[in-house]
Length: 400
Image (cartoon, rainbow, N blue to C red; front, top):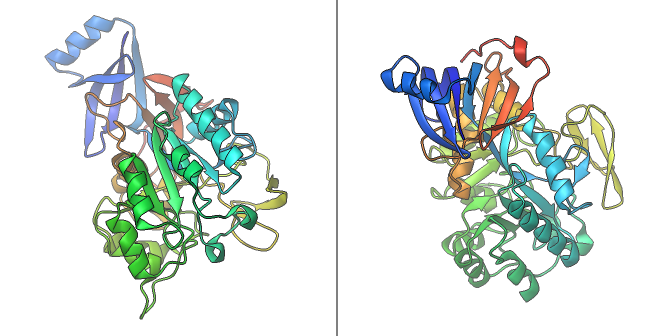
């Protein structure tokens, strides 16, 4: 069935467009026309009353490649389809239309359960699920962060086979290249895995060899990786000096200083830095409470999560918050912050999203408010509204 969205202002991923009609058919964008054009009038005549008025800013839906939890659910603790659906629903409130449920370092049994759940979620068309991110367990103990040391280990054939499954959609594996050989990295890449470097204490040369083998990304740049210094560039130096790799960044004001991120944006080619949340269960909940991670209480204080020993333990960041912080803290134009939340992660993952264009998935978000203080009024996945703010009827147009 065809449906029309009439948008006062639309950002298509490249430029703003005013007073346009956006047609969707079977979950895909099928036409975009000026509202007052002859083609636009024909579209309206074709659908009759099947028109949704959008008074705010219509923009491509956000894609988050690192989502540990949300809505009170933690994927490691409950690797099920129900947990994935809960996480997706929580993040849809903040404009996320595509995400990778992320299972951190754990037993092989849990990783397999997580993979099975993602495969089933994809088969059942659970909204927003693009694939899976295995963050570990083949990491560096000195850079493990809150990942449980007892589960950090060398890669086995069983794990290689798990990562290479062909029913998981987009597959991302974060690993430490000092613990996984270039030959294995190449094998994973050949099987369609997006290999990211993270939680690593590798030197520059080792990291470069991993990139040459096909590693294409860096997980939460600057965090849990060997630093950039005068005589040893480390993982950070390799990330900044590799033009073809993508870097995820956590823009929450806690994980990385704003000036450090500004330097990274200047160093990397345009379009190679994307926003991630590294979100934990409290996202989408009002409670300012702690939760349990591998038997340890993670303490929430406002917008910060810490283990009792002091390490940062993921985030309560959401994607619209990351966009707002990128405008406010990094002094980026709203258009660039929106690309970092949608277009660039779509290019990293290879999914047909991240833009409002004919043939792309009908995944978009209505935003209201000022740049740097935007709120989500509505979220659409495959043309279906999956979230609407309670005051949607009273929302005002969004400033650029």
